[in-house]
Image 1 (spheres, rainbow, N blue to C red):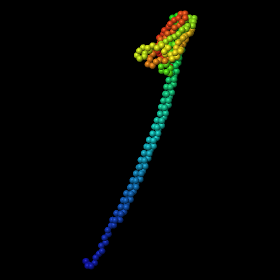
Image 2 (image 1 turned 90 degrees about the horizontal axis):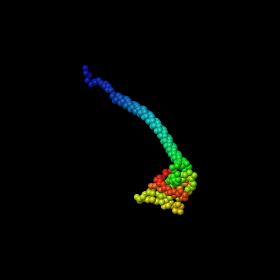
Image 3 (image 1 turned 90 degrees about the vertical axis):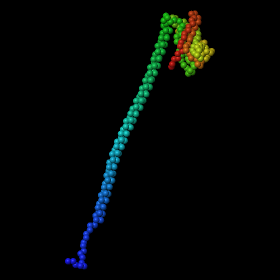
Image 4 (image 1 turned 30 degrees about the vertical axis):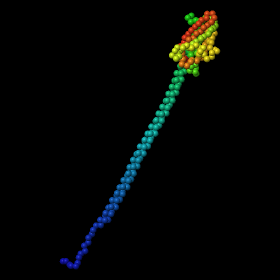
Length: 245
């Protein structure tokens, strides 16, 4: 039965979702922050690990470079030593070659001298009388001036002194023509251009001559004339050959 004028108060309970939402939001935020921080530190750890690996690789590479440089320097030093040894060996070989060449030339010169003196002191029956044994020509500091030496010998038993004079001329080409120049024209000392000899076994005739420009010498003709009893006139022709010193 309804009673007018009276009413029942109804109690309505509603859940306060705002607090829950705030708590959840706070927890979520905390978790997010925790994840971010964890990720950050994890990144740092990974970065440190990667950095450590790179540092290790870099240190290893530096050690390999240093080792390669050391090996290069060692090889370079060995090459320098080998090159120096090679230079020394070449120089030593060249000195030995030059000395051997000089000795061979000296031996040849001595053998020729022995043969010459033997021919003078112990002549054979086929080579007797006055002879022009040889002619030597050498350069001087002046390109157009040359020294000469020829040897006169007398091959005979119980040789007596022989005397006389010597003349010679140089034959060559000048301006495309054959030209003959006497020794009087080639010797600068005109007062001493007469070449005389007097010897018993042999005598060296020495001097210097100057050739005119554009004159190309080809041979030398030497004339020796003795005087007195059994006088003879001897002519010999020699090719123009310069001895290289």
